[in-house]
Image (tube, rainbow, N blue to C red; front, side):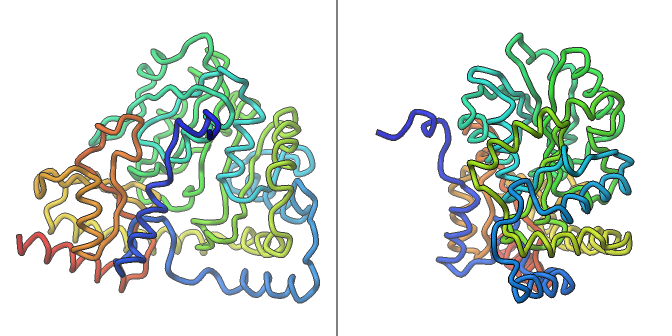
Length: 384
């Protein structure tokens, strides 16, 4: 029999919808996987590293030049003082960084607060660590961070809060006031915060405010991010965890026996990308704003309702006005009959009855793909 820990989660709905899209030749707006090239200088750096025989193990914690580049990046962008030797761990993507963090810092039976809708990886992270997830729901259409609702969910077993901003799947960017209120609660109740920040440079409204920069929070925050969204290289699997030395020591132990280390030549190329100047990040956000507006216009014309994303590259769209199907049936129909793949909204909630009239679309796609997908959606519902 399979281990009991595997019973609390299912196969990834996102990946299964991607496979279905490939099977039916649908435009894949299900998975947050760019279909456009990553920056050429990073590709050149990776090729040079491979040709230069950088093909053996790097330091398990991450190659020194990359850890230094990460420490400098957080100093330059956020004013954080990070020790690259003691506080930075390079991992195989943000997913592994989060798994290692849960396993390193949570004990069997500890509770971790997870805001929903959430990325579907969150529940498996908790299960693999033996922790108990406690869910606090963000309410549509504003998706505001309700600190009093979080307070009411805290018990004597609560150890940490998992926080994702810019938020997947809603596109919400939490304000400084929301972040400060949550930080105050964490200080009051002696809680850790594990942050998931891969979309921090894709912001259209407001600003990204890292939890580790809130007063008193750097010593109790694990900041997790990756290259994937910023540099359109989801397949490189380069992520990291920035944490106080005492936490980093434990995270590195788990990381060492999970994956040993991230790909050495790609770590060299990652350091190249982290040195890009502000123009790159400004252009990144501007380009994604164009993509957002293009898809949102099509979704609105087709009859979907949604909150316009403030960041990241997802839209959680409600289809109740145009279909009586449940979210899974609707996503299957969209993929098979309309030729556009999306993710059932219920996969972002712990109760499958929640999110039942929503689907998530990813707009990290080429303009041509988004125009074609938008045309198919509009035509499908105008015809109906």
